[in-house]
Length: 144
Image (cartoon, rainbow, N blue to C red; front, side, top):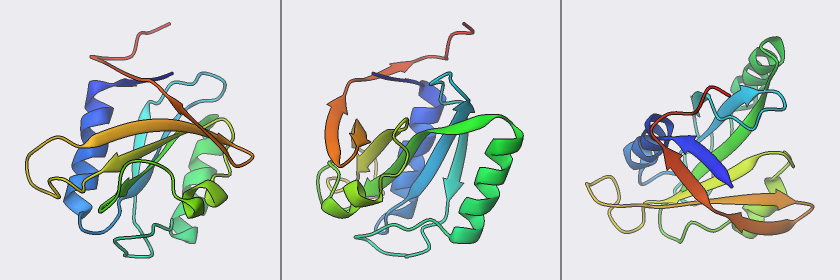
């Protein structure tokens, strides 16, 4: 199960809506070994595409340097789908290279960047196998 605080959930949804009709993407880093999504890092979709996302290689390298220096790992890797359901595509599955991460997909297909609900789902993707998991949104992460 992915447990995420309300502010991070809201920020991911806002990013997805803001970038619509292009796909949004980003990472939520957390302390190594904790499974705590604590630090949201919005990334630029270098592909600038409504059907594909790609992290800018320079930005991604910088992010991994920061995470390494802070003893962090990517707890959540997220992106949006603008015209389809929040389920990993074959391309998404092929690009999933962090076996410990939660892969969050947000679908903005129904309301775009207008007010209205989105589909927010989380998956584990390990060796090409996709497993959906529950998402629990809490007011704030506990301190334990």
